Length: 102
Image (tube, rainbow, N blue to C red; front, side):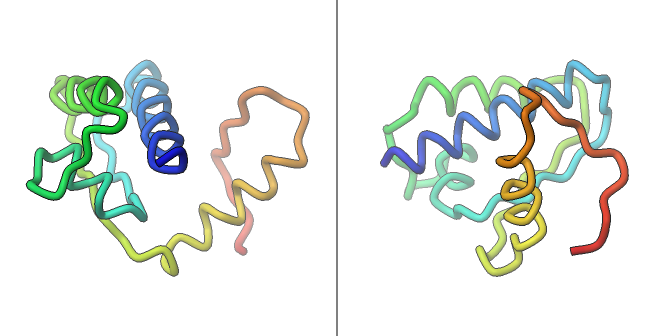
């Protein structure tokens, strides 16, 4: 369950950052179907991280266009590569605007 809560925290912080930067249209790919189901209020949801789920739902309800998409973990290789690269950096926050191909 710790991984589930960690992914919720990551999504919550990413959405807060995107909203604060004035991004008006966003598509987020999440490799956890149970997380997407929990956020969208599906029957397969989990009560772990309920406060985070409510926070994410509030962010999704703001005045912007956002699409939350569940993907297979195998399709998430780019994000994994960025996360691995970020682990080697010393900055607290790094915003990538131009990415090299992985």
